[in-house]
Length: 265
Image 1: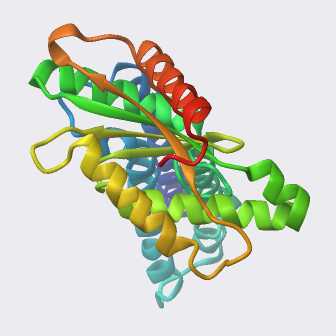
Image 2: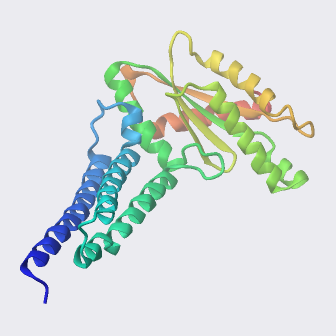
Image 3: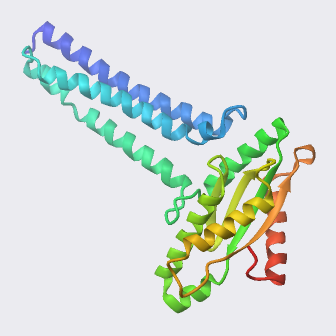
């Protein structure tokens, strides 16, 4: 029968594990609330990375616990009961769950081909950006982009080459916009970007930059020209509209341009 001292030690170690798992659950609850009720005043990057930062914080806490257990295992004063508690499977399950949670949160917001935001990620980020722009009196530009002749590329050279064309387009977009702008592949051959409008970043400047970067990105592929058709809509903070309405305007502008000149960038 275990001595009272061993029972007390086991109870103490078990309580630490319980506390650790409880903190994990609390973090997840706070994270869920934060997604629904995040303050618009917080920075865009901070809002969007809240899930990852929460997971990292949780993971760091677990690693600290594991480190303490590792030191305990190396102690000269280690009995079998303490060893059993220190190597409790719950610790390693917690580590695995933290890593899986972090990966799932990332995948839920990211397009797996281009690594830009997917539709869900874009709507979450852009909606927040519009709120901030309305409050700060900042005008924005929404670019709705459609890759020209993607079906022809797929039919002529295969879907693998079509995927490469989409990746090259994503590369050109990333080179053309600022880090603070929001880029997304909505699906298929459609991309969208929400950018701040400043004296040095107007629609004309961005479109010229995009055309240049598309040519650079596709220079190694002579079989077909890589181009996009772009429609632009402007968000005026004095006459604000919803993200959906802004996207409809940009989408209409893109199709109007496509009908008049299919290869205009």
